[in-house]
Amino acid sequence: MKTNKELMLLQKESRDKFIPVIRKKTAKILKKLIKNKKINQILEIGTCVGFSGSLMLTTNKSAFLTTIDKDKEVLKIADENFKKFEVDSRATIICDDAINAISRLEISDSKFDFILLDGPKGQYVKYMPHLISMLNVNGILFADDVLFYNLVEKEGKIIHKHRTIVTNLRKFIDEMKNNKNFKCKLKRIEDGFMICKKVR
Image 1 (tube, rainbow, N blue to C red):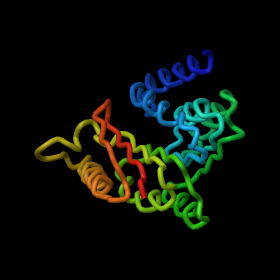
Image 2: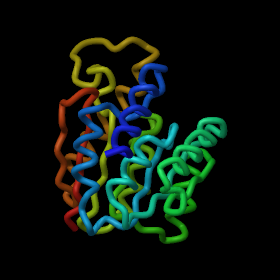
Image 3: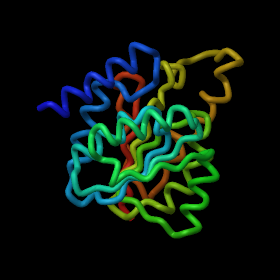
Image 4: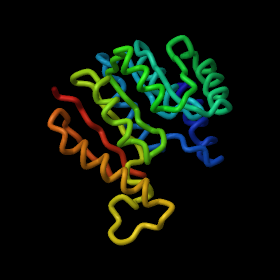
């Protein structure tokens, strides 16, 4: 299929340029999850060049995406890619710091069936209460890169420049696992991701 080949090419070219788009195996699992016909509204934290957004919208043709990133230049590329894959009519781009954007969405009582969390890793735990309140029952929170180069589960001292991110990711994982409203699975594939289903 032409669209799929073009998406995989975008993924490869991006990763070759060290642009942090979602990895190959993780993308396949994301694609399987997003096929669910009950997923209509998707929230994405971390638009980047629009690869994951385009992947989700071409996979689920009835879904609508709200995607957030604060990098104006990268959002121009994302907008071009949404147009290239003919999903721009179902994609709303918000250029802002994620915490500002999701706080406004929460105040406006926005609700989502699926949330892809792929922004600044050290901020996941800060975003968490807002995202939880906006996720519908039976909705899924998919948090990517939660093992952060395998440092999150590493024993011993973490170097200073990574310490805050690792500490915050450990807290995020622990709080999500212990939240009685969620059933969570931690997958040790590539850089690790969590799939958390809101059960009540």
